[in-house]
Amino acid sequence: MTKYTNVVRFLVKEGQQQTFEDLFKATRTWQGLTLHVLAKTGDRSYVSYGLWESEAAMVNARPNMIATLDSGRHLLDEISPELGLTDPVSGPVILTQEQ
Image 1 (cartoon, rainbow, N blue to C red):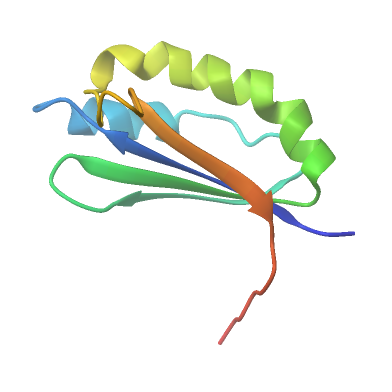
Image 2 (cartoon, rainbow, N blue to C red):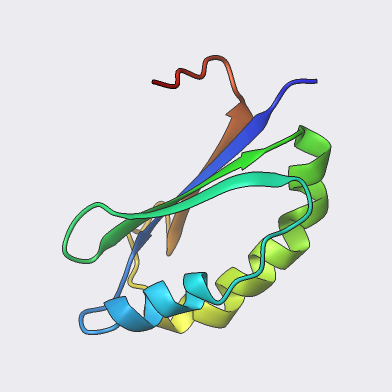
């Protein structure tokens, strides 16, 4: 079975970084999620990465992921007029390397 991944980029409002991080820390693990990473990629920019056991598991968890995101939208700034508040992408895992 092919593993699946989703990645979402965020721009957090000034002064709301800790609240945003706490929101993710309080989130429960969803069924089929094998790895979840929240990375701070700049002063206010973050990336959330999820590794899923299958595309179906990710799709099944999507309503819960959206609900979590909805609870924190007030913490986000617009990334750009084209993207809005988030920049989500997903797809099948092609390669994994562990060392």
